[in-house]
Image 1 (cartoon, helix red, strand yellow):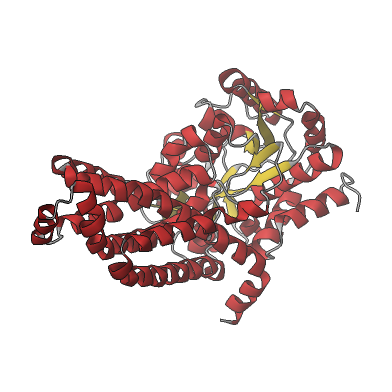
Image 2 (tube, one colour; image 1 turned 30 degrees about the horizontal axis):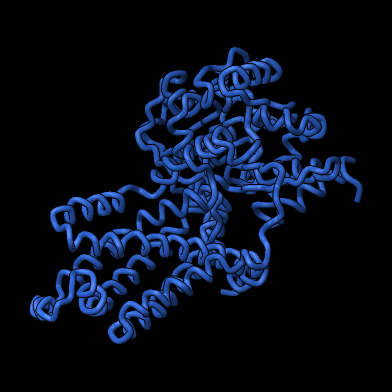
Length: 508
């Protein structure tokens, strides 16, 4: 409990910011879902043949995994809040639509007949009789939708939309840090409960005030959603730099930002923790960000769907640079020195127990050990798929997991071997043994800025600024910086600045 309180005190500012982001995204999605569902539900009460098919469509939307919806929307809307709000709106439609339709439909037929007998047309009967009587049911649907949206909003952090999911992802990335995960999860649950209580009050008053209750709710929600605009928006960025999940990408993009803003007049925005390679690359192609740190080996194998023609780092870089330019119109700037290659790692105890020195040695114990691989590594040709072909492996049990959980799994003895990166901080913390790769399955993975050629044409000075990092940053230096962020809980910006000052790129 003391640890949780310490984490809370250290991250209060971040927590309040994320709560506000979470609230805004949720309320915007709820308002849009309400404005769509209530009129549509009212219309369906007059077009009953269309009711079940349309309600069925909204039910299908709710069954689609949220991550799949977000991934689908990125090519059309980029990363950030827009695709997140669209996805959350789709998830919030069903409860409101169904309750609106049911609420109107269940109004006592005798009252409808009496209203008609008094000379009311369909619209007046709806506004004066049916809608006021159905409002408690409609408000109950809005309550259900609100709770659903608040809970689902946490996953929006995967595409840079912000919210409390950022804290949960940070906790997962730090090896399943329970305190950080709770710092994101608990406020999300409390937020859902508080909003539910507020909506319950509107539900109770709606029986008397009718449609005015819904109107008041929407006005208040709209003010909360757009209120910050009255105090001015964010500084307009000239370029946006994205990053995958993890400490290393966060450190590198902060280095890029510090150097660019120090030596040019360009304003740089950062989007951290955007997920795995495919999501970040899609956002780059779509134009949601202008560059991100990518690895030469990943560019060749995963993005160009090819194989490295050499194991020499310079030749691999040239192959990646040429391929990314010709196929995607992207520019690869000069790579840094460190090689963050994939590695298969195990504990010293396991290595000694089974006499493991190379990846090929796993063949003799493939029926006895359990592997913990990330989903990405498990599916990649320069990952487990390649291991099966090159080393003739067929491990009896492979558990796929989030990258941040691998170190926890191996330290707890839940798995025996994991995929790792050569510069990860937990390699030092857990004193893991890397199995040799004599068949050179894993090509060189040197990090370099991958950027849109249009951006480079508009801001050509960026190339010279960032190429200063070419050939810089050793594996030991990168590993130490990653350790500082992951295990000393330091700010990536501070770590990046310290390195740039120490190496003479920035003045103190």
